[in-house]
Length: 143
Image (cartoon, rainbow, N blue to C red; front, side, top):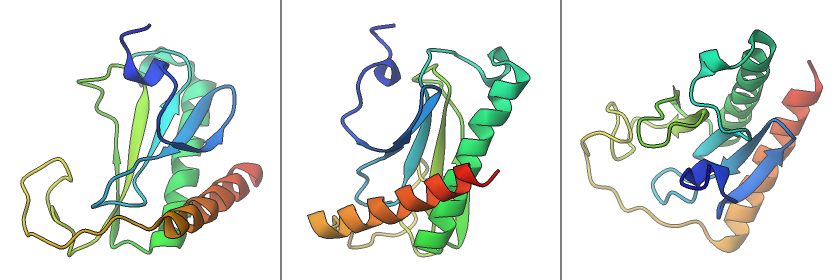
C-alpha cells in the first residue's frame, strides 16, 4: 500500500528486523529512546493476525520494553497502538520520566512543563542504539 508510511522504507534507524516485524528508533529530541515496533505486512488490526502472529508481535513489543527499561531506567513505560492516522499494525514503546515534558499526560498530550531538550550527539545516539539492539536480540533469543 503505497500511501501507508509504514509500508515504505523507513528513514529511522532499524534496531532489529526479521521477515515479520521491525523495531525502529525514532529520532525524538524529547524521548531519545522512543521505539516503534512495526509489522512488515500491511495489516490494519491486531485481531486480523492469527493468534500465533499476535503472540509473536507482543513478544517483540515486550522485548523492546525490557531493553528500554534496562537502558533508560524510566519511571514508566508507555505502550500504545493507535493507528488512527496510520492504519497499519504498530506499537509505540516510550520510556517516560516524571520530569519529561508531558508527564503524567500522554506524550501526544498537553505539555506540562518546558524543559531544555538536547539532541543526542551522534556518538551517544549510536551507543544508545547499540545497547537497545543488543538487549532486544537477547530478549528475543531466550524464549
